[in-house]
Amino acid sequence: MREAVENLVTLFEQGTLSRGQLIEGLLAVVAPPGVAGSAGFEPTPGTPTFRGRSLNHVTLSVTDVERSKEFYSRMLGGAIVWESQPDAKVEGATLALPDCFIGLFKLGEPKIHHFCVGVESFAIDSAIEKLKTDFPESQPLIYRGKELYFHDPDGLLGQVSAVDYGRQR
Image (cartoon, rainbow, N blue to C red):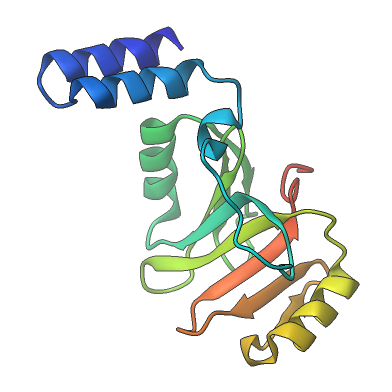
C-alpha cells in the first residue's frame, strides 16, 4: 500500500494527477477490497441471465510466450502458476494476479482471444440452457466439459464461469 501511495503522490507532484484524482486514488488504495470498485454501482434494472461478479481472466494470443511471460510478470507482478509441457499442441502459460489471471497462449496472430466473467451460482448445465434460451444467437458451447463460451453481437468470444474458476490450479 505504501508504494501505491508514494506513486500517487509522485504523480501529483509531477503535475500528472489533479488534486481530485489524487484524492480518488488515495481513497481507492485504502478502501477495503471490493469497496472502491463498487462505489456508486447501480445494476441494470430487470432480471439478468447471470449476475456477473468479476472479470475472471483474459486470454491473449501471443507470438512468443516466453517474451510475454517476462513482459507481463515484470509489468504487473503476479506469478506464473502454470506452463504448458514442451510437447503440448499449444504453448501457453498463466500469470496469476490476486483476483484474476491472464492466459498467454501461442494461438496465431496477436489479439485478445477471449474474456471470462465470473458469475454467481454458476452450474455449467443450467448455464448453457439459460444461454440457449435467452441468447440463442450467441451460439453457446461447452468446451472440455467445464468451459462455457458464447459469441457477442460483434462475434467476440466470451466465457462465463464460477467466480473462482482457474484458482484451483
